[in-house]
Image (cartoon, rainbow, N blue to C red; front, top):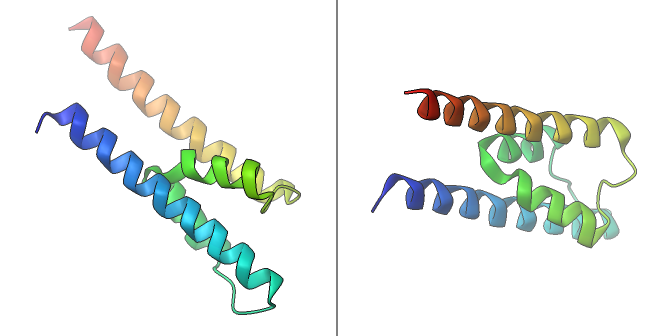
Length: 94
């Protein structure tokens, strides 16, 4: 399997996991059950699940009013964008 396919599969799996965790956390919140820690949600975003996190925030309306949470999610997204930009810049320059 080529490296691009592996990376794409990793991001897809992390995004699906993030979406599922957000959905589960929203369900638990509605039933006043035990919640998933925000640090856990951010960890899966950091591991590549930020697209799934944004999809869950938009479609489920979960965590969409917590400005600090959204700021951290945006920071994680920008971190990934910066890393990929840096990698692409290095590849293009060589």
